[in-house]
Length: 287
Image 1 (cartoon, rainbow, N blue to C red):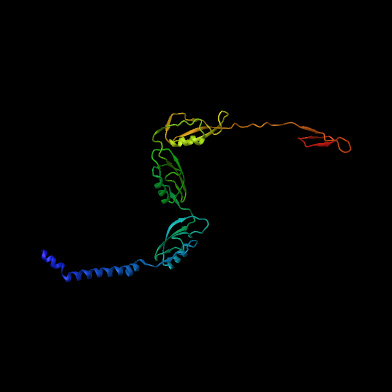
Image 2 (cartoon, rainbow, N blue to C red):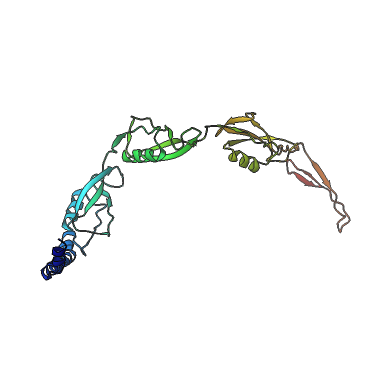
């Protein structure tokens, strides 16, 4: 057996056959790389996308077809600046270079605003809620945070699930900040300045709301007290800080008629002249 294997390896025919196979494979790869694949993928060919926005849909479709491009109406929106069935947006954008037969997605104006049914996104993560609302053609508006156990979980939505609303409507979300899982000790903040007190509260996961109170005993912006007055509260809760401010200054009010009499130096004739005036009336006489 060993002798036969040795003789086969020394066979000239075997090596010629192997070399021929390798050569044929190399030729096939070259043909694929330089002729077949470029033909299939339109290599080194490109089409400049025409600008079809602000055109009627039929006109835009005809223009894209003449460029060898396909098209699809992907969305319809209401825009009072354009007539109905006019293209208001396109993807890819105009002037981009794309492959022949590329599909261009068109957004078309409609006379009436389409409506959608609002999905329920409560208990979803903020990220998934955004995706869900966008998939329904809605926009995420203001995102506020409240203390709750599960971080980034949606607690409330401003538009109730199941409501039928215009497409593109804004939905505000209230999201959990992940706090509220434990009790924390309220730091000693009485007598501190506002910024120092707020920093200490942030360090333990508490919030602050400011209320000002006139005080002569403490400099302005000093913490006088806070509520609730407890040693420990739930993480994420809000303390109402009572902050000192300068007492209001009450200006004295002046009233009544003020008469002034002015005696000037004697004039060159030696005659004294006295001027009297009423501040209230502005009346003046020269005697």
